[in-house]
Length: 197
Image 1 (cartoon, rainbow, N blue to C red):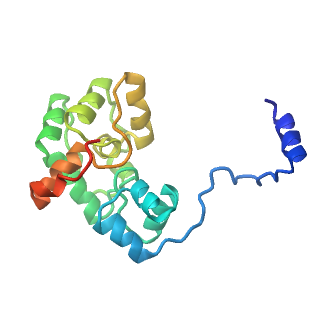
Image 2: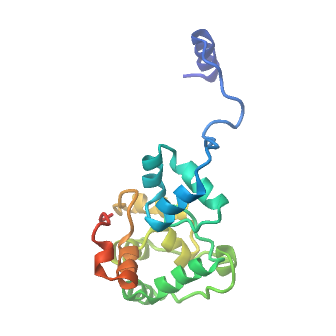
Image 3: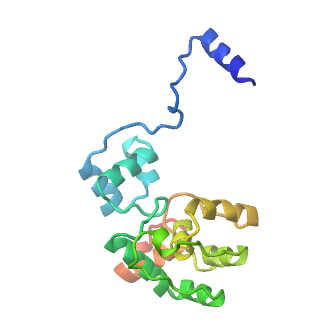
């Protein structure tokens, strides 16, 4: 349908048009810092799960978490600039399944103390479909973890598997890597209730 015809139909129906740039704008809803801390940090729910629980949007949850300086997990973009992010990268390199895949593909560790992702990877690594599949399926890392290991943006990592026929896990929940890490940190009982995604 042509834009002019769409505008005429909207006018005929009395539907007010949005202003420029308003499509896709996240509602500026404020979420209680305590509520966000309880659900997103303490209960370790995903942004989608928090949004469902409080009747908000995933985008609003993530925006509020960023504004409050909370570390945004998978689905967000770790910047490798704070202690928690550095610990995550170190945990990725230390994980036996991840390090086995990286060794097989001759991908060495990149220092974590040089700042943001762009500083660590001025030029992203060339990631073959096989490396991508092995990291995602065999070692069970999430797309944002692959970004931290290769410098390839999470958006590209998310699109590539579809083109390579790699089945993606559903949204929400933790990746197998994070479940393994959680089990080491808190003991095996800590991951019993986590959905297998």
